[in-house]
Length: 298
Image (cartoon, rainbow, N blue to C red; front, side, top):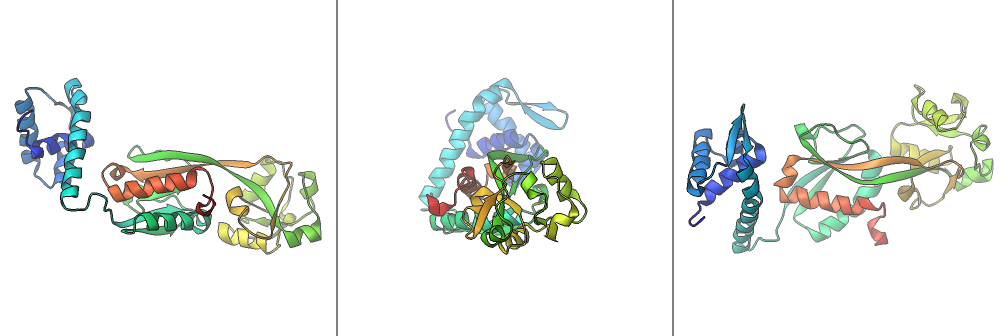
């Protein structure tokens, strides 16, 4: 391994990571023949076969797999050395876009973004408030916070935690209508609806609340607006517990019903492995969302 050419090592690493000569060449800004020559050169230099062709893909041989982690360590060390030489070993900057539902974007992300900004002032976070599933593969966002696991194989997903939601009403609403604790208590009281097509009503019925359209005093499928109507005293609504407990003037009701449980997934594309700023934001979000506590509680 004496006098190993760093360009050849990069050619090996990128081809191993992408599984394709053409993709690795694009990433390194080389022509495919040039990259192919570098891969062949490192194989000749080491006296081993690192790849074998499988159709159009480049598959690592057992020897290639054995050497890959060592090559990654060498690559990381070389990168760190280069950054340290220019005084930028800890510097990271740029814009990272994060897509989340309107409630998560409005209530959970701001303290996390504030803490991240204090730690990494070179990073600017663009918060995209959307209830749609952003297409990360088309780069609508760098990172997405979702409540369903993505099925696309080119995405990296981490289950952060299982969140819980309960039913709440305003203090003024409770003074007017009393404090319902059971599903039976809720039959004659107003709720804030989510849609007029009956989907939310059907969900509530499946949850054990035998309601009708007459129970809905108003509607909004926008979670922040829905919660504002609940806080205004228009009716009962559901909200994540770690958001509700920081909202003054609301009371948990229907305590006899079990919590609504749903997962929180943190999702990114595979650039997470190579883009340090995306990786930094991804880990900050994972930490901030993992236990459902706001940063000011820590």
